[in-house]
Length: 388
Image (cartoon, rainbow, N blue to C red; front, side, top):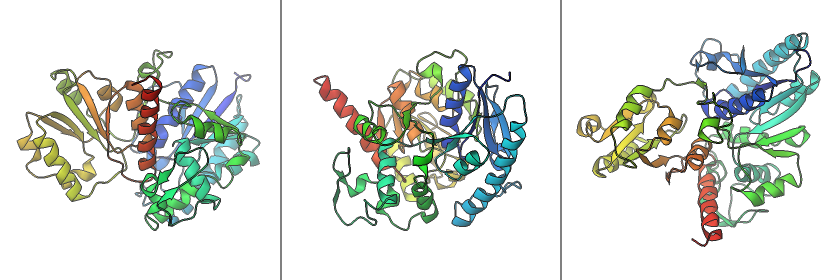
């Protein structure tokens, strides 16, 4: 046991960051590496954990009483102080074990974790859960080569196609929206060049020019798409799901409903774990689905249900199913699903691309606009290269 390499992996404690980093951890474990996924007390309270090859350790994030994250500057400062301390204590404890950790893979949203790793003698690897394209834009903003707020209608950046203002992440063209989160995405680049490795959850053919530009300057590694192996390369026979969820999926209801539908007849609608649509937008979407005369499966988080028209479920009982959460990979891989209406969250986008499900993109915030452009541009380039 003492000769095995031990890697610690710590994601920011939200579903969209936990999923890809846990998948990466499982891949490492499949190679005989001892892997520990570090999560926080507040996230652990709502976790649905299944058996996995990865050990899970829980540390304090300063919100042990279950206080809801408001993503303010004060929240992030408190989170940083608490996690820096408790992570350091965990590493010190593990350092005296038979298999001490050698590497800390940390979420790029937590750049200060590199300081903890270096102080305690570990290598550090920054893990970016977003695209290289979005990261490149934020890098240029952080280093001043892309000024904000943007005044030009078109923006030119190295290795990227000409971008309109609307192709930029919402944090860039809507200055003042989510200022604390904007600061977090910029601070990813405060010390990332000091990391021993920089991992990106993407694949080179999707954004080849940007990948090549970044690789020419920094020690980046492309490790995506990080989705369960049985939905991708099928190398890991027991890797059928993410093994961990902050939400409770209504799997039986979803799959039983889909099993009774014809091939390609269902529109699957989901806007992920964070995006919040306005009440008017929810109503328009609801009536659009109702009048489309198509079957639809719509994921509406419990916190968003009050925005639905009161008559939706009654009037669509034969055509539609509305659930609070679902096993998305199972749904997307089901033969009844013919279309995915998505907010363009990066995990959802990679899942749809990997499973070959057509997408209707409704970008919401952060880098969703640019992720949409990346996918459209990639599909266009693949089509043109094949003469289609």
